Image (cartoon, rainbow, N blue to C red):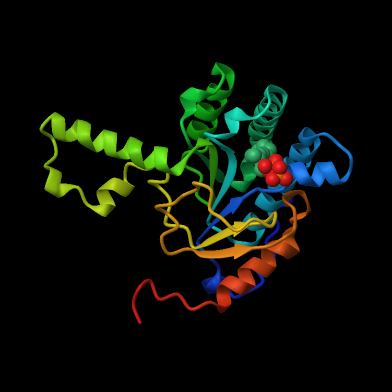
Length: 243
Ligand code: FPP
């Protein structure tokens, strides 16, 4: 991985702090080429790595990717298996790029994975825990409603044990029990692939996010496309409910 800084498309202070991306369109990209869907995921994973490198080079501090939803288990076994193997491969690959000081955080329920992959997720989080240049959220076995329900369960347990009063449950406290508790809210949500929906991704964290949709299928989404989204983001006026 190259890690030479690259001039960002907008002044540094106008960059989104946290970008979240729904990596959509792999299947259609492969179909257009008469290839199996799995080939689209292979290319999609390469795009993931290239974009990670680019985001790092232009100075993005937080970036999250939707890699696998809780609903994606319903896909055919070979497709699920292929995506799991890609995660194994790219988690291993991350160890070759420790010079980038990128921290990896799993957003999702790790207990859903095969034991070896679960261990890989645990290890990468532990091994990159004090890296500070960029934080990457990998949403895998992730669903936003489930995440919020899980946070509510944790808080309810604290109430049950007498360690918390119900009226002390604030937005901030609930946010501390989400998988993203060490990340700021999302500033820019990008969804390539032509669909314009959020699909149960970071619902709480996107409360004030700017949305950017484009028709490019994920495997073709490159640094120029990311620049376009960032430039569009920088043009928008964010009022956070104020005037
Ligand atoms: C959505 O496209 C994509 C997925 C469900 C899987 C994304 C997974 C990867 C890019 C590879 C593994 C991830 C990492 C981080 C190494 P789709 O197949 O639903 O697209 P379609 O709408 O064209 O069918």
